[in-house]
Length: 113
Image (tube, rainbow, N blue to C red; front, side, top):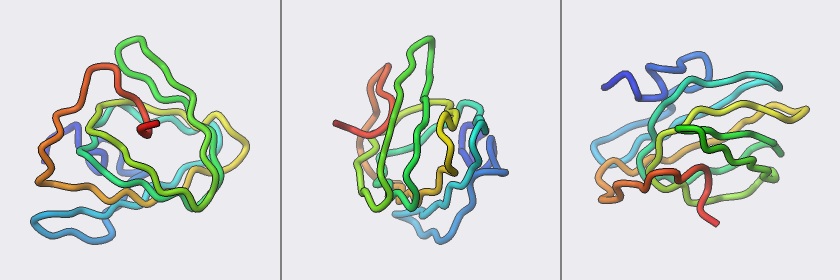
């Protein structure tokens, strides 16, 4: 694993629930005001377990994201840092696709719209 892996760069927020050669399932949990350092996600599906508000950032670009509990969204390959800007915890499950061919695009932040 490299230092941009979220379980390495931000172990206080990310934990691996299950993994094989093709997929890794992560749980993410933080509290209001918590911030992550920069980390990378491959193409993933994110399932929200709580309503949340976050601000994602990379290279001077920011994006505010608000999602309701129970949403399932596509997260294209990206590198970002994040901050919980809401009044509730951010609790999600990320299903990372290890063998996906997406390379991401500069400035892509958060779920695809």
